Image (cartoon, one colour):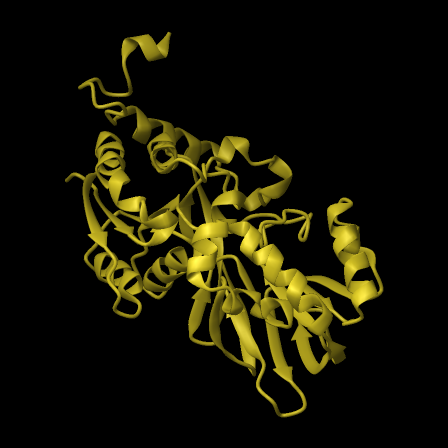
Length: 345
C-alpha cells in the first residue's frame, strides 16, 4: 500500500505566499513515494492541530507542517497525544523559524525544504509537555518571554525578525524580577528571577548560542534561569551569548540539563508561560521531556555531530533499512527506482 502524506499549510504565513508553492510541494512528496494531499488551515481555532490529530488517527504515514513556528506547534500538538504518530516534515514560512533553523531545513525556499523529506534523513526528536499542552522548541516565563505577545502580526509580516529586535530593545528597561520556585532533576531554586527558559534545541529567538551544548534527542531539556533584572547585567549576559555562549558560567545564570521541571510564582500571582512563541497558560506548571517522541525529517548531514545525541544516531541495521527504503522509491519522478542513471555516476 502506498504511504499517505498530508500537507497542512497556513496560507497567511510568509507574507501570505505559501499557497503558490502547494502544488510544487505535493509534487516533491509524490516523487518521494507518497500519496500526497493538502489541507489549508482555517481561521477556526486550532484547525492545524485538529487536522493533524485526524490524519494521525487515520493512519497517515507523514504529516508536513507548512508555516511559522506557531503552525508547527499546532501540528505537534495534534500528533503528540496519538498512539500512532506519523513522521513529520517542516516547510518553514514564518518570521524566526527557530525549529527549521535547528534542523538545518532551508528557510527561504519552501520547495527546497520539501526536498529534505525526499532525502529521507530523520531524527527522533524530544517533545516537551507543559501540563496538558506540548511544545517542540522553547518554553519560558518572565519579562522577555512575553515578547512575542506584543508584536502585531502585521508588523512581523512587514519587518520580520527585526520586529522582535525592536520590541526586545523596548522591553529591556522594563524588565523586573519576580519570586519563583523552580524544581528540576538535580536541585531547586527559590528566589528572584527575571525569566526562565526551557530549550529543546540550540535555536531560541534566532540565536544559536543560548544553548551552545544542545544535543537533539538526548531526553533532556536545557534550563536557563536568569536571576537578575538589572539592565547592565542583562546587556552583559546578551554580549556573553554572542561571545561563544559564555553566559552559561555567569553567577546570574542557572544552567542545567533536566527531564522534568516544576515552576511556580511564589507570591500567589500567575506567571504567563510562553510555548513556542504563543501563550500557553499560567504557572504553576510542570514540564516533562517526552524523549524521542516524534520522528522529524531533517538535513542530518548538515547538523554537527556534537549537536545530535549518540542515542539518536542510526544503528547499522537502521541505516541499512533506511538505504533499502530509499532505494525502492522513485525519487525524481522519472519512472526509475532510486533515481536516474545519470545521478548515480
